[in-house]
Length: 358
Figure (spheres, rainbow, N blue to C red):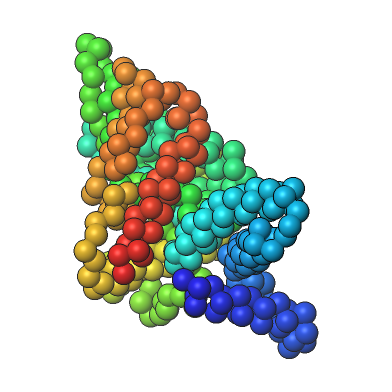
């Protein structure tokens, strides 16, 4: 561990020097932004390591006083300081171990979230709308910006599908464990007999990627303009500003109609395509890497049932970590941060266990 810590501290100090003295770096906005981002990402672990070494020195100083001083009061005081310093040293060691776990390189990225109605017909579409509202309210509560990229609304106000971007520092790290099948159990608005129905919606969370991360050839794309479609209403654009994008090698088709500008819809469609192609690439790489452990919080596979929302029992259960909350209304109003924290904590503990076994 300390070899890694020393290497990290050296890298941090080099970056600190370069950011202050390298004129070529300072005048290159893109390179400077990349360097400052890396510098900030290293700051927490370096600060902990510096405190760790200072605490080690305090322990040595206290032990010297205990061994060499003739003053009983001084020795008593040093003994108390020694006890506190040893406790702090153990805490710092644990914190540094966690900070050294390799971060997901996508954690700081913006995300594209796709929600699709699954089994259950109109009720599933209404549930998809509930999930969209939940995520929008959570995003607003933490200062993230949500922008709808595409939607297919039903007559009753549900969504057969909806795609939206979430922008903000660490957006992917907060949303990535939402991928999978979400199940709802409730009496549908369309049910006259009062029978409880089970419906599903599928959520996919994709990191938004830059042009340089995914190569897309113009010759592989087919752009078509079309009129916007939907449940109706004044917000539906009657001009041919909607865009249908087809990626010939994969057969992926993306439609965007939220903007009145065809150029903006085209840009959004390309963003979604890049994210989908990057996701395919990431999944292929993951399949090539043999792993002895199956993550408890899941792989992000969209076929995996991850959570149940039970209205009659006012209950939400996350099946991956076995957490049940009896505050469904509060949860659906966007207060999902506690559940996300639990998922992140479980994932971190699993990674820590794997690191210790290596």
